[in-house]
Amino acid sequence: MTKEKTNHPDYFLIIIVAVLLILGLLVSAGISAVISQQQFGNTTHYLFHQLIYGLLLGGVLGFIVFKIPLSFIKKWSWIFILVSLILMSLIFIPGLKISSGGASRWINFGQFTFQPSELLKLAFIIYLSALLANKTLGGKRKKEWKLTLIPFLIILGIIIVLLYFQSDLSTLLVIAVVAFLIYFSSGTSIWHNILIFLIGLSIFSVFTIISSYRIKRIFVLLGLIRDPLGIGYQIEKAKIAIGSGGIFGLGLGASNQALYVPQPISDSIFTVIAEELGLAGSLVLIFFYLAFLWRGIKIARSADNKFSQLFAIGLTSWICLQAFINISAMTEILPITGIPLPFISYGGSHIAVELIGIGILLNISKSKKR
Image (cartoon, rainbow, N blue to C red; front, side, top):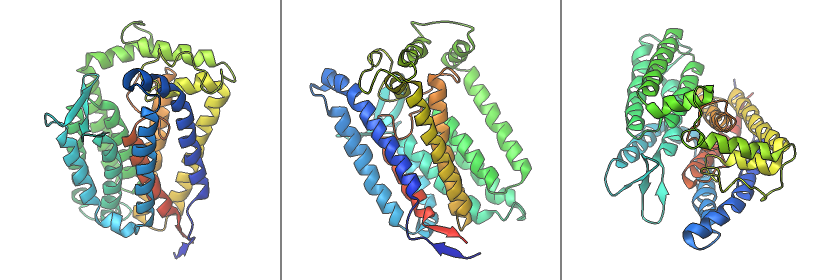
């Protein structure tokens, strides 16, 4: 197996991500103008924040990792996960943490805030890909459980504890599913994967049962209870917004429900897209995420080494899983969650980290096996 240097990244992937970013800016610009005026006295606060701390910062960092040798990223993967875990721990320090909606998930750095769980997603994908690339040989290495399963469970256990005390089960779900897909794809023993699946299912079942509001969200989804002014408020408003869009929508910037849907520029932005661009626009958006999945799988299959292959699988599944969860929650297929829509939702942290991940993925796409 030889390596073919293409010297250029995957242009299809660049176009897909660019379209999603532009759509996110166009939709959020109109919605955020009113909210910015109400909260800050100007119409551009949220837009400039997204441009500077999301697109600009993420674009610069993404370009840097695009140029860095993949061997360097793999070698220092343990530093990335260590730094992200330290940042996650800072949330528990009074004066640094920012609480919203009963949860503390942000760190205050004065002029800007940062959500370390977004960095944790990427760092864990890098670390796990490096770990399994180094320690597995088609699942046949002796004492594989000591080299793969135990380190995997230890790091994941630490992440579970940190996210549990931050009341961020949605992020934990994404990380756990992506981690399982990477672990399974690495060629580890089938009994490892069965054990991990059973442990994960048990943990999520317990976390759901002991939380009354999570149980209520499931009951709302199943139609067992209806609380349009309480726990069911967001999904009720989401259905009104989506239904108002019809086939072709009301037009870009013409949303009537944006002021009534909770978090219209972040978690609920898909409902605004559906209202403004209709069913047709929503299907086009879904098509671009499916196209992203296609390019990610193609890059993974063409990768010339195990680390690159596992990272491509991990990042692609992360982006597509979040898109699926967000859209499914807004269309009453899954319970309401706090997962942002990749490249679309407002939030500098997740946009910047996603673009860093794209930079690494494009780096991988420059080389392929012949």
